[in-house]
Image (cartoon, rainbow, N blue to C red; front, side, top):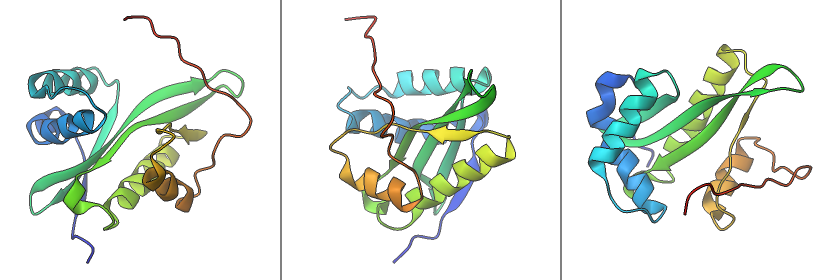
Length: 152
């Protein structure tokens, strides 16, 4: 049964609510829990207008979030949004909450005049890939993406 949920555009005032779910997300990606660090990181991003966070709330409790970062395309000279984070707590998965967050993010992108949205996910994260593709996200078959680690 789908959970009744509300999607909220988070502000700095929502840090205490979103930090625990952000910390769960980091742990899911095999990082050590760091609730204080999560609070600090989110506070910096939101205070400096460096990201946009939407949270899904069920019964006044945050159960999911997505975080977007602004980018730009030099070739098209247009803004782009990077959907860097999407996480739904285990008990709330497969209830339409992730889909609702994706739809909210896409609508936000349209409203802000972005050319497109981009995201990356782990190769083995088949559940996420299925969700993204069901929402018309297209797998990049043109470019190979690289990253350069700058710290050990």
